[in-house]
Length: 171
Image 1 (cartoon, rainbow, N blue to C red):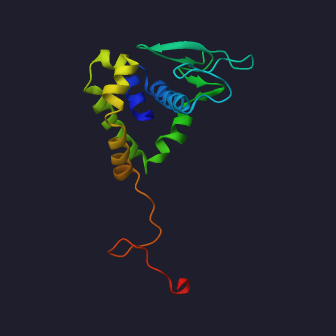
Image 2: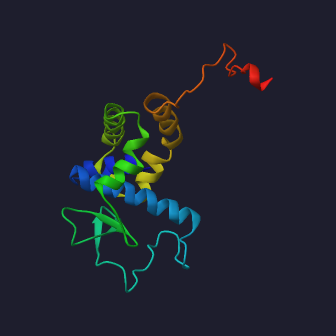
Image 3: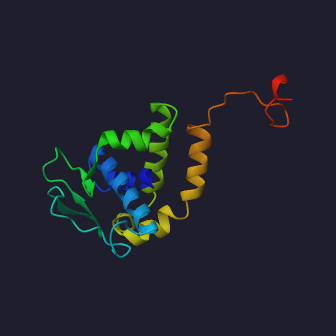
């Protein structure tokens, strides 16, 4: 979700770091909405209410979608609760899942290509983006990117049948 949402934001004019912040923010938001926001009775699609101790924030609109941004942060940085979705947080949560920076860049280019196939009206609509861009591709892209760009670490060789060899001490 983060990659396609970030590519969407970049395509709609946000600078790269702000697009990464948007992508991570929307992924966190929709994951929380899917599970039900903790600590309250917020409806799905409604952001958790700001509390007295929450940092200052303002609503930022991207098409018909919106998120809170921290007006005191340098550039455009989105927040959920008291946690900012910074470029460093995007690196930790998203970029690090790829084996190396080149693999992340290749997946990013694929995400930009996918989003580039749709008109601005589709990208500006939260529902159309989900229905036409994200949902039809989420599982396939996740599987492809995992296979191509973040293969599992292999600590032991497998035999031709795919089984790990047993050591003599485990018999």
